[in-house]
Length: 455
Image 1 (cartoon, one colour):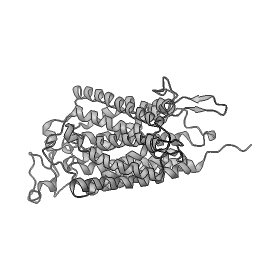
Image 2 (cartoon, rainbow, N blue to C red; image 1 turned 30 degrees about the vertical axis):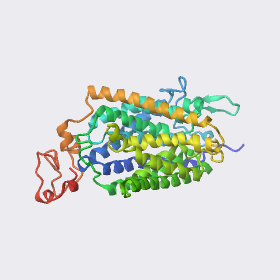
Image 3 (cartoon, rainbow, N blue to C red; image 1 turned 180 degrees about the horizontal axis):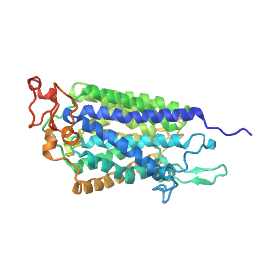
Image 4 (spheres, one colour; image 1 turned 45 degrees about the vertical axis):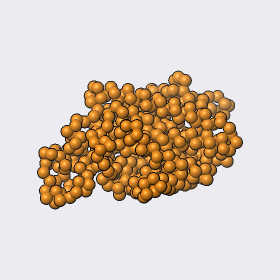
């Protein structure tokens, strides 16, 4: 009898995909960092790096067990002590085909990027220390359980006996979420909306322009996100085969179509297409195709992506109409894009795709559509309510929002005693950031416009 061996090709693909997804968090830091004003760029980037640090440690200690331990009740939570500290997972198990630790690492970077995404909703005004506390609490009681709902599948042996019981959305509801439209994007978008409401509006919201201070950084960040997202989506096939290949192509074309959809919307609405719109359209398309990439045809992906670009471009303006300050459009892009991409499966899924289901437009009726809707809104409501409670408790105890003086002078200097740019040596003096009333810039800076120094 030939001994079982681990599939080295699949293992290499998963480890490579995990590295690609890890790169998305620094990419997000650049994307978000370029979108804020110059006095906030370091804090914005630090929020992503802080999430990377906190979630990585918690994932090893108990997060993986919460998410992928054997279910301990109604598909809501994995056994929190089954894999505590990743005990028992370092052994070589050729029968698995893929090293368990490769899967552990791959899922870890999903948890990291989900937490980091939330930060864009509260840019310019959150205490860094409280942000780290929030992340630790949030991933423990929101992300880890929801990852169990969506990503943990029930397993059986050759005789059909159940060897592992997973989460309710994946196994009972049978909603399709290939790579995280619910667990990642709807989850982060709903959490971002909750925190934006808890912390309140930035000083000058709807009065000051608050323009992105560095659009090249935004474009670089969007490019890194697009690059890493191929690991995010195609890597979720967990093998280097046909499914990964179809998903790769669908991810490419949906994202391209979304960028065009966003730019066209800008052109019709505003009379011009912007670089910020192109970058935002890219992210909107990536978000929308994430849950649906295994269930659509390439043409269906173009349609879903293009509509995502239009919907998200229109949705980012809701904050001005409804009065919530979602600083970097986490709600407009990730919540709306995630909802659309998840529910679109119920319309555009084709049996010819790897997922093997048909949506309403392909003769499948409404069966898959209602499953997608229930899964999407269950995650939305759960994340929003619990996040709002966590944020409120932190605000009333340790304090979540920085004080008014620090917000005006700049969160980088107040929270990190640093400046993102040393413009002729005027970046930081005695802990005061450029633009603070307590520091006087030299003549070379004084001659620059307010827009150029982005204070």
